[in-house]
Length: 423
Ligand code: SF4
Image 1 (cartoon, rainbow, N blue to C red):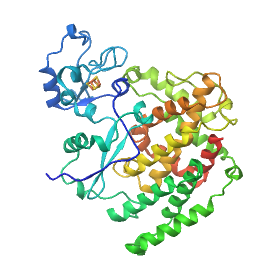
Image 2: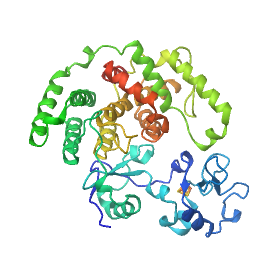
Image 3: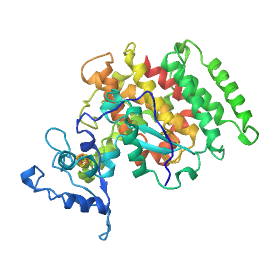
Image 4: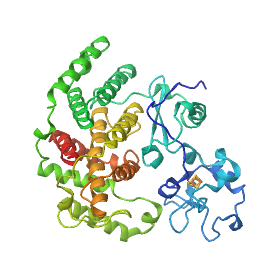
């Protein structure tokens, strides 16, 4: 099969720094061939693989299920992870001997008509920190991975809808995406203003009927809408009003999804964990008293403690969040097949909401450490926590999560939340 050309995000670097975080956070489903291959490696307790834990665990409730995942150690880490955060399979047999899911992480490949876009998961701290080699310099390895994960006929996959029942062809859809990227990249404009302009642009695009705006007319339309969106966002963001009461409640419920921890260890705790999550959801809906700490870095602080201004954001936040948004947009990691089949407009609104969610989580981390200001490390950790779920947790594709995003958009609260938590 002829391979499609790769579109790489030019602003992102990455190399693995063996933190082992991904091998603790994820369930790794394996194919029968991968299981056979690992079995033939004959791992023993003498090599550090725990003898009292299964190396493979059957998935699914039906007794005949042929789906398996890798086993975990008592602390939730993969059975093949060593004490130094290294993969034993990789160390002994090389990178190609690992399951495909491990080889791909943190990359994501998405069909884009006659090419394939590459995005990255910011749940990896090295991605957040932009640490490692440029993706361009790793093109040969990425082409090898593309061969393994991109299915035949990927060029025939349809583009995402722009909004419900409004679909353009691939080149036109990519023009809309490029215009979003241009607005996010605008030189000399602070991040929050760029983001608000882009949200306004996307909102106007969502109101368009594209039947007569095709071909060359589309570029004129996109230009006019960009200029209108830019003019509509006031230079002084302090003039933007506070988020509505209903919007704040919807937002807290949305954040509650981002601060959950869905690792093997949590899933094993059964009903006790479900009751804990239900109780936590009620507390997030009410928004009074203490924020229930849903995973380890968090400590109980008051909901009210997270609402006052936390002072100016550290200067690095502009670069980190701009890179995050642009990598996701360029990589088509926010809509269509890569994001629960959601249309482009709703997908971008959902992506924009990651920004106030990250700021809220960062405030929680800072307040837990007794600070009233944000440090860049708070933001970096908050982004890794949020992006672990964004586009991957099945809950984000469910009707209630999606209607929360649409409701925040229709209340015009997304921009207000961004400005509120950035102050
Ligand atoms: S097989 Fe290796 S890379 Fe994959 S989760 Fe286990 S330790 Fe990590």
